[in-house]
Length: 363
Length: 232
Image (cartoon, rainbow over all chains, first blue to last red; front, side, top):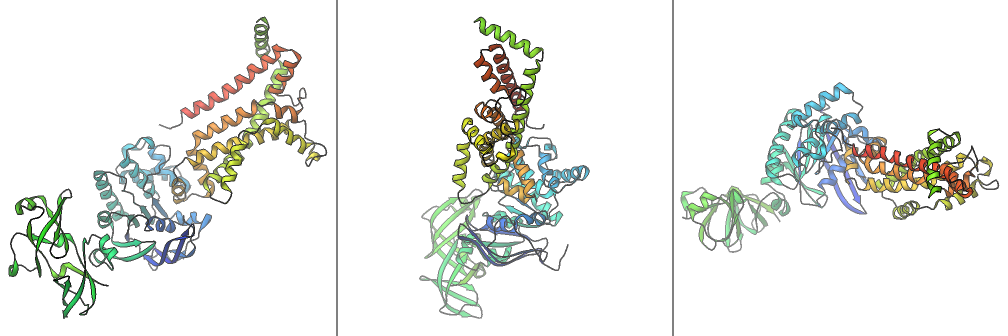
């Protein structure tokens, strides 16, 4: 393993389809062992980026380097492709047994009997499908089929794995257990991975870094904490779950302690914008606390407001509360807390959040 | 009625006693149509897969041509092959008109669009991302074609059946380009036409029964392979 160069590097990449630009990425660098989650809505270019990285898409301009060496396009790319693997949203299994499916990449590489047997067996065990080895691939459940597809990809012991929404067609339980397995395989094999998803929980669970994509470009890339808690713009903020995005103007800033006007209300936060600057204040619903009494001086939260409950939406294990406190605010609350506080739509409540819970983006 | 029964009885005699003439005609038919089918498989699967996988200007027109070609009238093929191979024609210098080679050429032209059309449809009905998945596994172009052909093997068996069935039973082209020369370019269909014309119904029925048996046996074998397709 060459650690002097990034494992995968993209320089000045431009991809067009039918004359329309689908990817425009000036630079992207992925280190050995990195797990990069590509987040973005449908049509953001996540799948196109993965296909381009696998050299399965015609590139208009730019270079894709693997360990510092330029990868070639077209028919010669099979040599490079043998150092990577790709898993698609659909399992795309061949009309044969699970064993022969998992062995497919090895046969393509002209591996021989005993080596194939060993590698396939290891991959089948890794994904908990050893018992399915002789089963007809067309008769597998969705979860079993995707496990087979992942085992096929890992059987070749790739340096890089590209995952294109591999869990999106699975039910929640199957998805959970498969994510667990994939997580441990990635940890054990130290494979560099790039995973496209539109589900931020999936991305959070598996990724070491996140890249948010929009209209074929990477809007923000960084550590999970950086992207989730310090989005660079309104699009990223809404995509990473900052449900309350408030437009405001900085009133004053005293050594980083700011007060921002949101309509006729004022929010305390920290940041380095100057008085008069227009900003966006982003607040995660999980950072908002609800109370039937005004905590006031008893709380460390710098922001407390009286609010009216506009809407309560059940979201499985918790409820989403939409509030009007002179500005829009969303909060999450568990079922038991909802009962204890006896919350009802139209009811009154106090909301509070810390100054540090507000992420400020200059406009 | 006696005519038919007598004909069938004599036909079985000719078959059971391995009548040299009937045997010769049968073997030539098998050889000529077998070779034509094989050549059409190579060309048809290759071009059919290529057209199915690639997008290029005029693709729709090419597909229309292939589909039209699936119903090529054998006599039209016979006519043009004859003109091309005629002594004063472009390939007259080859001097292969009225030979089994000429029949192979005509039958290949008849079978190729059939194989091509069925291959095209077979490959097109595979999942669109399957090609990308195979390439992502590190396959070369040749490995890609091989794996896709394996995935589409059931409809491809139909292509073999349709191709072979189409050429072993055609008469117009074989008659025109082969000349129905005894012991040389006489095949089952041309011989049946000739014997019927002569009123030799026993011979004609014998040849027809063999033709039916051949078509049935080959299709039965391929159908069996088709139904037994998956390894357990």
